[in-house]
Length: 432
Image (tube, rainbow, N blue to C red; front, side, top):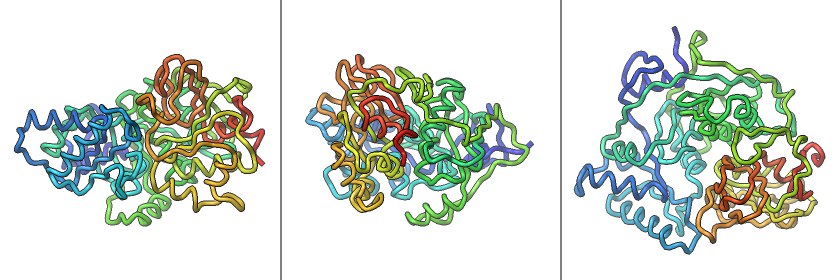
């Protein structure tokens, strides 16, 4: 019996010839990533367990991005960043990207790709559940708790159970009104938020092959919303071209064997799918946009590691070009690179930045911002009574701020269309 791509990476990282689901192995970790929310407690645990004079297993393999609670006056949030700053200075960490400097990059999950830390065939752990985003590059990436991260920080290893794999095949071509967000919300509606618990979610098919890397990252990003251990997509020419653009080479590619065994296989025809939303208060509370259109909104939000990439803003620009927003609309680029690209990338005769500002949208600084609530002065944070439609990845009560707000999750096309009308709107009605 053959192995899946995830099983092959586990075998390679554990220096074994073959692994099977359910088997536990010691993985040699290639990259450990953390940020301002989980970095300080990870450091505290590491110092307590390994001793104040302990050495990091490999300072070149530790990557730290302040990105969550940063543009705020909150003293607790500011203290967390200061703790990271002190730690990075003490251990002379080359991969610390401090806020307030030219090195600041924005949201960790996109920054990992932009800075060349996403390498096919490797193993990446991060103290954030959406670390699975990096699996779009044919690598194993998943989130861990602070204690596990502290152990990796000291040893470079972690004891993990090999996950079963689930396969999601999207055949056909992607219609202009459909995005990766619609596909992953469709999956969540079918298998629910625990349907892939501790399993690898492998995406393939002609519709996936047509996607750029940023769209693929939307799929793998939300694997965790189904309980998945990781999301993964095999390397192809589109992957290789992106990696070449950020200076990554010399990696090892793995693909699933034709006789690999899967826990389940789901097959879709992309041509037959329609724009969808996740209704409050769960990412698997699926509905076609047509079934909820007309729902009155108070805010629209296009941003986050899931929905703040350049491709997401290209989608939004198609809708917002030459139009005005009817409700408060936030544009939050996920990285500082994307923020710069908004001013250079064009749709028709205008830059994305000009399209959004002329539409009346508010363009915020690159960060996680309101995606996970945050302090009271967080940009875009929901308040009591808000009804928000957002490109983010979670809509649990309080996720974007107030527990008394309602959040719908949707594609950037659907959010932009809804921003124009002030009610939930199918993007097919506005696409030219």
